[in-house]
Picture 1 (cartoon, rainbow, N blue to C red):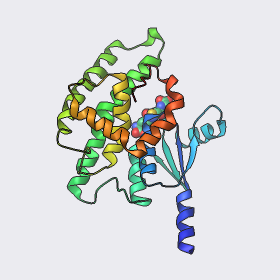
Picture 2: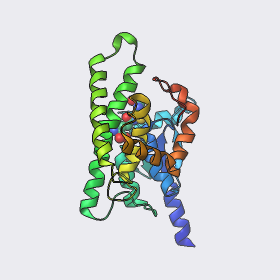
Picture 3: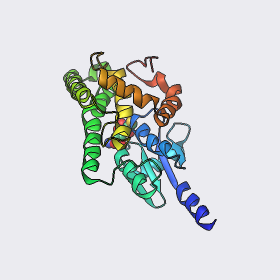
Length: 230
Ligand SMILES: N[C@@H](CCC(=O)N[C@@H](CS)C(=O)NCC(=O)O)C(=O)O
């Protein structure tokens, strides 16, 4: 009984500073939802200036999500998931114990962040700029990067259900929002059937489906137009 209360109190010490429509926030939310990990949602919104002020004090770089656990602040969605896996583990483990499998998972997490998520952000941030401040060359480079990433990932996913290690992992938490918004930003060509099927599997995963549903009210914020196919 005492142990149960302690476990609950420890878990409730978790706070996530995030926004539901933010792709990197969704990456962390997937991990929390997978294991039904209790946490206090600290939504960043103009209606919550105190939350914004606390977030700014904790992380001057200003990128979210961040996780707070007691006196620890964990920055970067990958580190948030690694932290949850190590210190608040649940039935779904995000980084395998096996060293080779763990490297594969971390490698694919980097692939999704660097070669899908980053170019998508470039396209989105560029679209939010005033027309005279836009960066045509940077946008063309981001689109070219996505084309290369889609082709590589399509082959990678030809015989795989999940991105790495034969099981749902950190890599899939990274992949889900990255591929979700990638298709909205630079459509994944229909010939990439394995990649599109993987994206559909991610969307069917209850943890990500929940994050997508919670973000629906904010779709009008998407500067490139939010399609209603998802
Ligand atoms: N490398 C960071 C990226 C986080 C990130 O770029 N978050 C976006 C939202 S998806 C953000 O904070 N945007 C606000 C801004 O750029 O001011 C991570 O992995 O968590």
